[in-house]
Image (cartoon, rainbow, N blue to C red; front, side):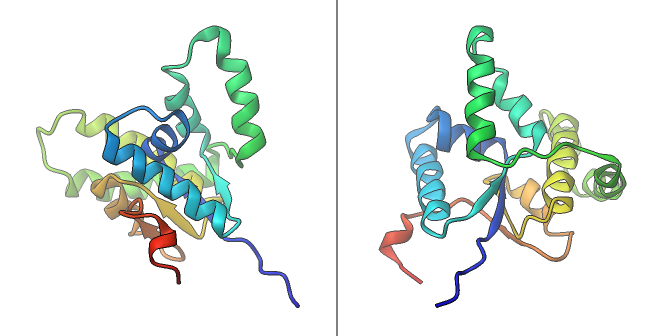
Length: 161
């Protein structure tokens, strides 16, 4: 019997917060939990871009940060943003800037973060990208070679493949 090669999936900051820290609205916490259950069920290798880790650590007490970084590093692949990512980010920013509505709260901040997270995940060979943010997903879908998904709306055990 041949062994299946695991899927490489990347997640954004909300998915990490909802699935690991368990902070947020109940429905979003459930979706984060279901995502991690689904990824565990398929034995996925999970990419958490270093920018996502930085955003996650903002709410972690300074005295606990090293332990949290150690645990995240044990559980996930944490790639850095490099020059290859920078080249992808430049194109994404131009597209995203034209697509996102002007005047929206934190528009530029979110776009900049997305333009760091998405290229990091894509250039490090993620086959799937999970985000609950529709603007982030729309931007990620401009890159070919991967499947861009929202977080699950129900446990995967309800509807097996």
